[in-house]
Length: 259
Ligand SMILES: Cc1cc2nc3c(=O)[nH]c(=O)nc-3n(C[C@H](O)[C@H](O)[C@H](O)COP(=O)(O)O)c2cc1C
Image 1: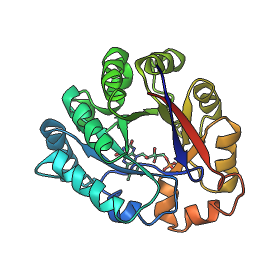
Image 2: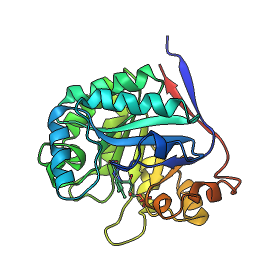
Image 3: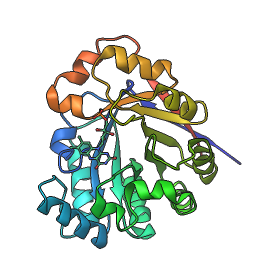
């Protein structure tokens, strides 16, 4: 017998992942429906790649025990934040994603598989955007995580050689519940056509260049159920508070999940 579970989002707003920035303290500041912790590295090899990234001046979360470090962030977030949460993860091994999914499940959260990162140190070991080029591997990871907890996949738009329609079909068939699409156009605005294409197939978080109510509403008009932002929040800590004064953006929404 198939049963449905409804996941409640109290409004349409999502804090998008920012490595080295989105810890529990940062995430708990915002009145969003979904706060995405991380991105985190979920196993030792991806953590070592993260250390190289730090050496050249970028921010990353570095933990001596990756999963314990993530667990600490989740536990601390739960005491200060009442919306839904996700953990954005990259991993060299498939097992890293599965362990992160089990951890998310234990605390009622969502795992977000990072098929988006384009830092060379991560791509070299098959993480991030490289997963978009290996649909079979990404699907097999999703097949396993989606049996454990609600699974989102963060994808980047307009990556050369990626056939988005086929990718979304494969991920949906594998059990993916949410696609978080960074609809970036190099040097341009967001690709709202891509958001439309993805959201016609699956529950979607629309992302890229949302800098105010008009762009956020345009994401919803393009079919996204939720709208995320990252850089705008760094510029203005009250960004989400301002968006919440809009009636549509402050309205709740549910994700139906078959279990
Ligand atoms: C400093 C910084 C760190 C980021 N780290 C991650 C990450 O770890 N994982 C991820 O999926 N996206 C990461 N992103 C991408 C954002 O989540 C978002 O997709 C991107 O910035 C586009 O959205 P925006 O126009 O609202 O900033 C990062 C972005 C920034 C600015």
